[in-house]
Length: 127
Image (tube, rainbow, N blue to C red; front, side, top):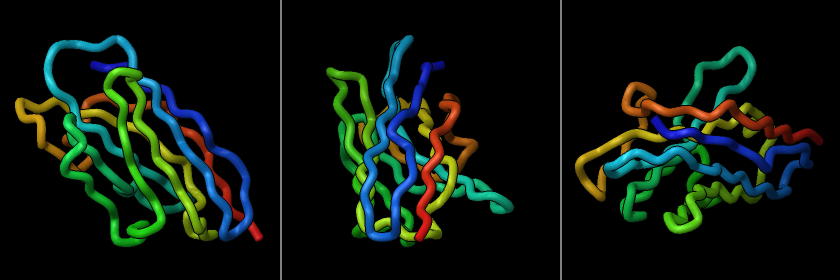
């Protein structure tokens, strides 16, 4: 499994922006796709975005399309989620996750497909 550490969470007002980063270490052989999930109080954890090993495809939940952008830098071993036009309903703990694949283009949106998880970073949007 990979070791994942999220950072970049914080407190912002509606319409504000935040960029979350996921540092990846302790690599093993193979290809990995990465996803961002979030969980708000009293709600189930939901998939936000996913990016394949080679960066294509990229998947976004309908609730964040047009506002969030996922990217990765394999050389720097980081995965980034750039969030703009934040809404109160975006408030949640955001988790970075990774899953292994035999394909460069694999991506997923189910928790069961991800074997490595970070501890999460809090994003709070309040007016």
